[in-house]
Amino acid sequence: MSQTLTQLQSNQVARFSSRKVVQLGVFTALALMIHVLEAPLPRPLPWLKLGLSNIIPLVLIHLMGVGEALVVTFLRTLLGAFILGSFLSPGFILSFCGGLMSTLMMGLAYRSLYPKLTLIGISVSGALIHNITQLLIAYWLFFQTLHLGDLSLIMLLPLLITSAIPAGILVGYLGSAVCLRLKEDF
Image 1 (cartoon, rainbow, N blue to C red):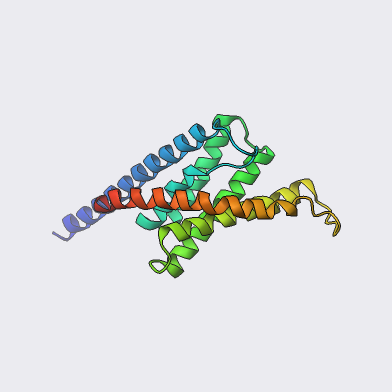
Image 2 (cartoon, helix red, strand yellow):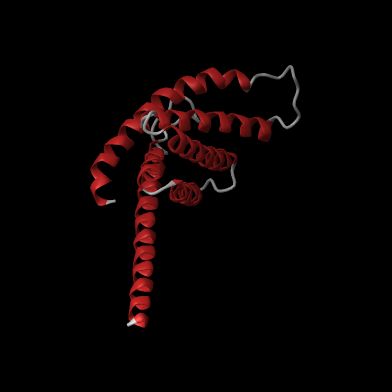
């Protein structure tokens, strides 16, 4: 009897793990699809995107946890770079670092401020950190010596902050809508 109970428990753990792997695979595929489909869309500036694929990490933070969201963000940026032919390019480095820092920020905001701060506010915090991280990484990549008189890249900060707010609101709104639909399944 005790051996049967142990086998049942190990089967439940294995089933749970298999289910989680499948869920993460589906969420990774969705995030990757959005990432690739968003790439050719027109942009006001070459590096400025809505970041619609960040809907998926936001949803995962709410439904599963920060760790799962980080796994999907990691895989999305890596696989997306391979598909789009930008692996190890400056754009990949910016996207990779910005995506991971954004997901970490959204996870921190979620753990410490949710539900006082809605998913829309959490998404805006992630969008702001994403843009600030990319600016810092770009400064490090292209202006490795810090000259106090060279503020050309820093002058983009107001534009990046201004663009992050509406993008974060849109991603947060869409992520909230997805969470409402998926809440019953989790």
